[in-house]
Image 1 (cartoon, rainbow, N blue to C red):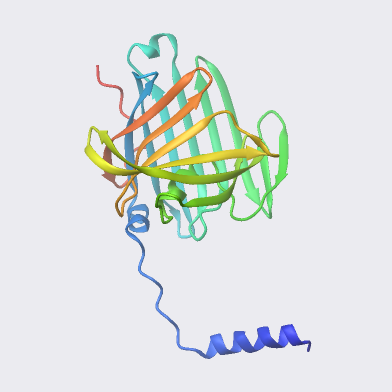
Image 2: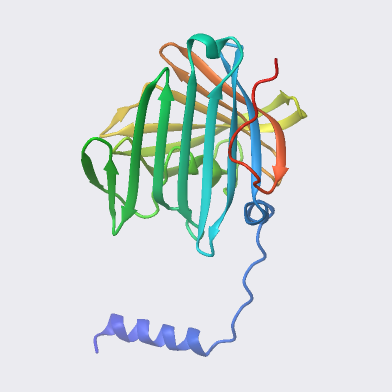
Length: 255
C-alpha cells in the first residue's frame, strides 16, 4: 500500500470510529424552502406596469427542490404584447446543482419549449435539436442561481464565482455584492444588498445585465430583480410573500 492511500485509509478509519457530530440546524432560508415559499411580483417595462410574476420553491422529493417562475402580461400591455413565460427547474438539495431545467415561452403567439437535463457531467438541451455540453458540478441555471445566492454570505465587496447553463451554453458567472441600499416595495422599505451576477461564455461578456436586491436580513428575500437589455429594462418588484405553495400561477394585474 503506497503512502497516500495509507494516509487516506487511516483517516477514514479514524472518522468511522469517532463519535458522530450532530448535523447543523437548517438555516432560516432552508427552513423556508422546506415549508415552501411563494413570491409574487409586479412587473414593469420601462417603468410602466405590464404584468405579474410568481416564483415558488418547495420540496420535489426528499433529495431535490422544485423552483418555478411564471410571468404573464396584463393591463394595456397585454393588448398588443401578450406574454406567458414558464420556467421549472429541479435542483439537488445538497449543492443546489441543476438537474432539469424546462423553459416554455409564449410571446405574442411565438412559442418555444426547451428542456435541459444534467446527468453524468453532461447538460443535454432539447429544442429543435439536441445539444450536449460538458458541465462541472455544481452547475446552476438562470433561476436557481437567484435562490442559490440567498444561501450565501452576502456583504459589500464579496464576490462568488460559479458556473451556469443557459440556452445550451456554459457561462462563467461572477456575482458581485456591490453595496447596501434602501429599497421600497409594496411590502415596505427594506435595507437591501445589491448583487450583480456578470455572465461570460468563452471570455465574451453577455450584453444583458442583471441586478438583484436582496433583503439584508436572515430571509434574503429577492426584493427587486431588474434585467437591462438593448430595448430597455424589465423590473420585477416583490409585493407579497406567502409560506407554502398552493399555485404556481401568478394573479392577474389589478385594473
